[in-house]
Length: 171
Length: 298
Image (cartoon, rainbow over all chains, first blue to last red; front, side):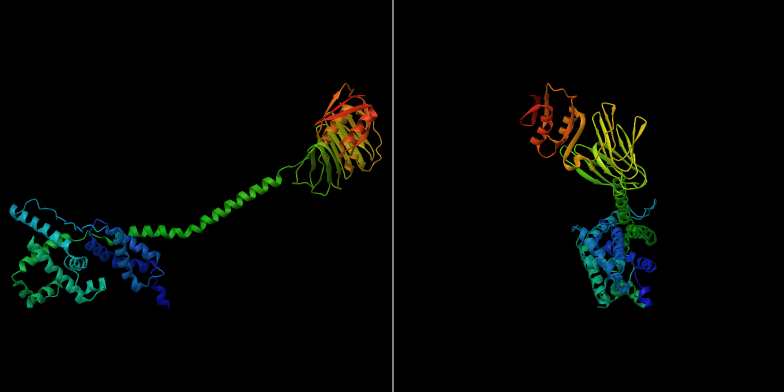
């Protein structure tokens, strides 16, 4: 009885813990799925505000799915089926570089191919793949986040890798 | 098959040393590593948990402050109460006006159960507030007062102040005509700083600024309360003026001495009879045309 009272999301300490645990993953999920032109950071905030408003109705163990579903819906509402473009962040160039200009050009070309190939992946593939490659998450963690099996995650990621390589070779 | 397994394990960050070596031997190892390095550039923008939580918290505070909205309806109710109270206060302290038009009589009950019978074409003004301490009213026209016992009771007219202590009296204040008749008790009339005391049956009469001799009045009530206006040695013009108060018809006189004295009465509800009561004793004739009546010598 006392435990269920303590586990109320309306309790600001628990709410803060939930935020610290899920906000970054939620943000990354939205970013890899929809790109950045719909401002995933705002959607994270909105989703958490919604959770706060409904804190009495959502059980703490359901909070994560609630947040992901809410944020996903918020995105879909704003989403006008634009092509997903992930921003390529150039790391600050070293002033002196020992790479040849030819190599730099090739590298730039490769990045553009990769960007196009990424936008061709399905949303499910891209989210799982980039969570794994960029954020360095293991299959099991991703499976928990997306509420799917580990096998499913493995399939998505391996499929994404295969498709990317084929697309890049083609381009 | 072995190759796919190795790649999957690499993907899952789950290679042991032996497998790592085998993986590095794969012919597409370099390509995989190249892609892997390039992918790092697609990293999501930095998401600062603490900083965004601060922003979120301020948004949540705003939501919380909505809980204080009980204050708004409370203020609304308070405003309505304040307005309502001030209207109530304003209207209750306002003077009460009672008007009668021509051919209308009315009776007014004062807060202390004194009664005022108001004759036609008259105005009575008084204030209900503090009535028990300050019994004061203003009169234009004619009225009969039955005053309940109590403190000083003042009737203020343009011609003088009439003060009493529980009595019955009649005041008639028309244009250049002022008459007070006491029927019971004692009445004091202050006219131009002279105070006259009236005993029951006494009449105080000023016509055209001249004080007329007192005459005994035997009736218990003024005649007008019984639907008649009665006069004792009153110039004709005041009789006609009173006639105009009781009947809507306009009266035009032709070659008549308006200062002739008239003694008698006329009724309030029969025009023909009333005209006869006034004209016959004075040897006058009258003719009626529409709303106006012409009086002339026979």
